[in-house]
Image (cartoon, rainbow, N blue to C red; front, side, top):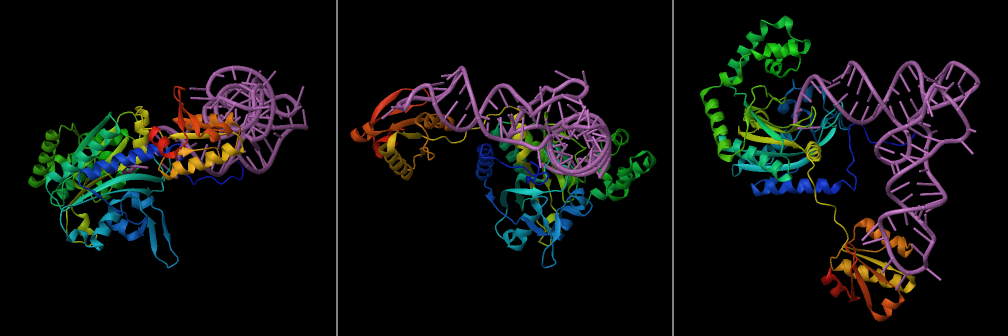
Length: 419
RNA sequence: GUGGAUGUAGCUCAGUCGGCUAGAGUACCAGGUUGUGGCCCUGGGGGUCGUGGGUUCGAGCCCCACUAUCCACCCCA
């Protein structure tokens, strides 16, 4: 292993033996999204750095210290996307999508990049499903998006997740709240941790999220965003809760959820898994009514979420969720002797041309080894061709699970029908 | 970025007080059975003991640095 080139830190391989799980999960997510009327969109892996600075926010950790930013040969500053929303918004403004029929419903499955210290459930390249719903400001949109997340988790078979919900207000009411927070924390300034003393000026809402015991104790008495909502925001939040009640989706209001991306307004939510360690947030999202305008489009409301595929897989594994097995061959064709070998190859070609998953041993091993191989591949049926079979055009079709055999003509049409 | 633990075969791991050519299970390959898988038996291939340096007659084991993984903080998916 000394000179072996390894994968860059924080990246992970999906091996052939893992890919069935990925495909299954992605398939479920796609079908849920499409059933709710969402269409897939794909955007570039890298964008102009400014997009994220303006969209996600300069003061966030994600933009401030976690981006993969580089200068390309033309002297442009480009950045590997750290999240999906900004790119989609950029694309939809640029291509006039938001000028068409509203609402617009879109989803994507893509990888994101953040330069963080890797740990379980946290990679430098990770994959997420995201959905975005543009052009609907009513709480119906928030409820729809949350319902999709809940349905996706349910269909994958994840049980121990809880939905946590909060409203962080809008540009009308947030300044009042910010001011109240500021003056509250100001009186305890000396007791706050170093980072929180910093946050006091920049973004006092973040102090609420601090894990240090001192800050937590202070934050316990801090004013809550919910108490400072303007009438519209309060009505909106009440409606979201009511629609969720109608959906039978349980939730708890957690005033501590503030989320680390600046574009959120009003509704923010997280689906948190019980078991997983510190990285229990499987899905997070919310409303971002100001983002389209901030990025130069006509002001258009939006709601969406991101769901981490790796975390989904981790959490599913921890709950013992069973995924469908990788596809196994329908038929393994073994052979003995040159005549058998020729016949086996031709038969496999004919079956493959008819869409049958048929295989033979291209390593030309002993019959015993061939059948061991068939067993490893989990083939449903096997067949052995030798001189006798070729001469009589008949072979014994063997069911690998129970060992039963039936005599059958060596004919691709009959065989395909028998499998 | 901070702190802690760990790194021996593809995988899971033993390896005593520093002492012969570094082991087991599993996986892989072959044979036992010249044309029938799973079970069993036999044999085989596979290691720069994470990397580099140091101590020592001698290092997988002790010391230092680096690196990677895991865990926690932080942040978030």
